[in-house]
Amino acid sequence: MSRDILLVTGVSASGKDFLLGKARRFDERLGGAIPIVSMGSAIVAKTNQLAAAGQDSVDRDRIKHAVSNDIMRNIVRSIVPDLAGYPATVLNGHITYRQQGKLVSNPDIDAEIDATAYAVVIANPQDIAEWRVSDSSRCREAETVDEIARHQDFTLQTAERMATILGAGFA
Image 1: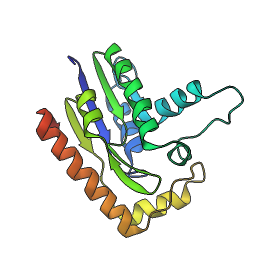
Image 2: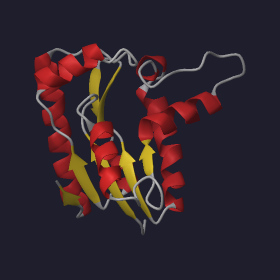
Image 3: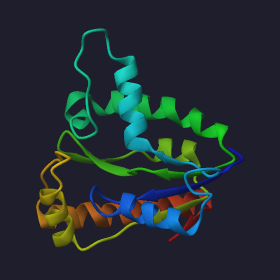
Image 4: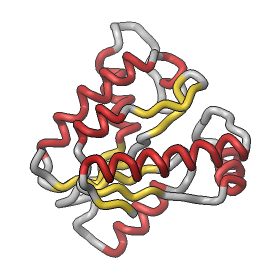
């Protein structure tokens, strides 16, 4: 795909939204001419759009338990073409995630997204655990500090591998 996509990734509560919010203050194009697309919000919107009439809607934390990884892959794959409408995009999303208790990555879908660059947001796993507990607006899947550290390492390795395969930048 011939467009610029900066894929900002990291484990849940690592500070992706915080970082992007700060970046908006320094570059007025962010969120305007260069949209910031939240993959989590797009997944929930698409899932609720596809839900049968009368079915309960899902939020971004419960969706991981409500659908299988195959269904999640199909939902994400259906969102990727929507990115083609933008000449440049900041995509805020997870390239690894916990789906029904297992760490998952989807390199084939990452290749379809074809990011120009990857930025991995890293934070101290203990801080992430504390931020998750203090955020009453979310109901994230419980992970121990060691599990968060492994998840973060897996995310970093996955992003570096995908950047190498795709010839993308990596930070």
